[in-house]
Length: 156
Image (cartoon, rainbow, N blue to C red; front, top):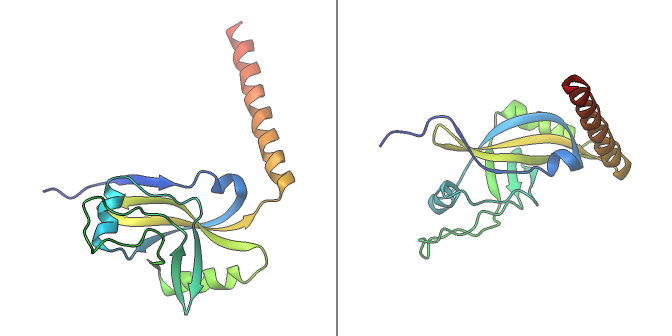
């Protein structure tokens, strides 16, 4: 059987870009059990409540829901267990020092397969305030209206 080539997205956290200001993005490998990989290949996962934490110079992904594999037996995994992420030592140290700053956290943006290996895209982010979210929505709305007006003017 030929190995999967390219990037196949399993889950993405679309709300993260609305709730956080993304400052830096990293790609990390994941340590998974067999039934977790099979459940991911079926395209089932949720990153909504996920976050990352550095413990003992290791990066852990928590709160991510990968449902149990339907054909799994007693060897099935726990849906919300902690999962170890694989990054270079310098990247982990940089993330650890930056998350000590007030208001910064590490969140998962997307979960995907890259050439047959499970990867997670994580971001160093700072939480937005409520008025930041409203301002971003207003800017997006204004840009949309401007492009519509230009298009209507061009069509006349």
